[in-house]
Image (tube, rainbow, N blue to C red; front, side, top):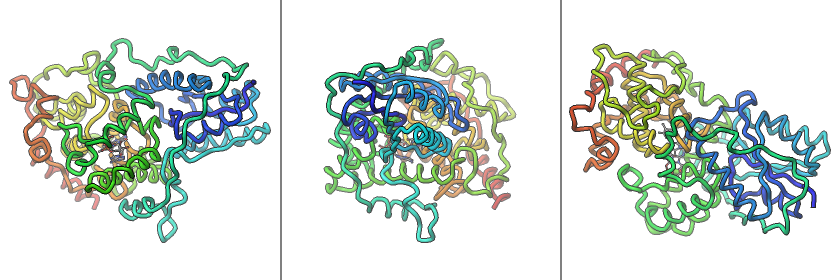
Amino acid sequence: MPVVSIAWLRDDLRTADNPALLAAAHGGGAAALYVLDEESPGIRPLGAAAKWWLHHALKTLREDLEALGIPLVLLRGPAGRVVPAFVQEAGAERIFWNRRYGGPEREVDTAVKERAAGADVQAESFQASLLHEPWTVRTGGGGPYRVFTPFWRTVSAMDFRAPLSAPERAAAPPAGIPAGENLADWNLLPLHPDWATGLAEAWTPGEEAGLSALSDFLAGPVQEYDDGRDRPAKPGTSRLSPYLRWGHVSPFQVWHELSRVRGNGPGPDVFGTEIGWREFCWHQLFHNPDLATKNLRPAFDGFPWEHPEGSGPQTPAILRGKGVPAPSESRPDELDALDALDAWKAGRTGIPLVDAGQRQLWSMGWMHNRVRMVAASFLIKNLGIHWRVGEEWFWETLVDADPASNPANWQWVAGSGADAAPFFRIFNPQTQAKRFDPDGAYIARWVPDALTPAYPEPLVDLKESRRHALEAYESIR
Ligand code: FAD
């Protein structure tokens, strides 16, 4: 059978609960397409850790799809051009995809739909990555939600569809598929040096690993999640974020499975609310496409940052090629914002909880949520560095970095975002460590040098820098 239908996969790298794949497979002759698009205007190029994840995810996905008789074709280039050309070359009659919610992505998808219509090709899109469609959920006044609680009250009361099965195995893969590119030629993996060994130890990208992370979590830790989620030393959270980010697991699957374990205590409900925060971040991105670059609260445009922005996500010299930060040189008398930024990135600030988080991030491409908040607050408020600078570093180093959750959370910590923590709520990393890492196990795991002479003195005095931050904030109130 020739290629009849194409499933254009993007952030939905899974076979189950994938409406676009299911539609394409219906009737046979289906091929799947993935396009690495680093050229369409406005689409944010992936960070280094995300590229590592994508490589392994595509490798696994190809095998999973082959087992269903669906070949996966890889192409690179601006999707608005590449996708219609592939459809034409393959002679396909239909193309399906699951919706994306970023502004530039939607522009590309609209253009592809228009090209398809002009070529008499059926194009259809589906809801698969969010429980709610951001344009369907509005406040009483008709606008988008800016406050989480009423947003989630509305969304969580909606009926969500049950997850869909994976397509049935096709009798044979379609014939005459145009050749794609080799994954290895995309150079997504770091080679010289290979800094990703910690990532490989921590994670197995792909659908199977994602679904087992979900079932492991729901089989136990979810019941204590209301407290366990704040204990960075323990595996108290689901670690589903990269699996949700890449769509190995869908929110419908999570919600459906979660409903089976509800009712025994607050843990599952609190966990459901965190899924709600993910929805809220995407709601914000849909309604504010420039979330990563623009303060949602314009008052912050005039904030007197010590270090504004623009340095980009460069890897500090002491991290390059090492993976483990080297002992620092002596502490500069005058704090230079760029040196401070490098120290923060390298986990050499002299503040153990912040350093533990930053080293966890560098090592495994992930950081515990509690510590993300503390590390971000320290950068923004104690070091006076613009939230965008920190957001760019997380974008580069997180395996779960996504264009909604990352900027929305950075704006939340900064106080410039929707329903954000007020700026004057400045986390004290020492108090946070005492409260959430009471026996010091998390710090001991990531900063074993904390009690040695080689460990740096604190970069800043916490009280003094806090006072300075509050003064700066007064100037924009
Ligand atoms: P769990 O506690 O098990 O939560 C389950 C799921 O809920 C997560 O996998 C995630 O999909 C969602 N979730 C939980 N908290 C949040 C939140 N605050 N915002 C959005 N979704 C949430 N999360 C990302 O997925 N991508 C990011 O790029 C990202 N950047 C962040 C940057 C900062 C500065 C901060 C403070 C938080 C950021 N988060 C981000 C949110 C949160 O830290 C992670 O989702 C969480 O730590 C992932 O671990 P988990 O899967 O074990 O979470």
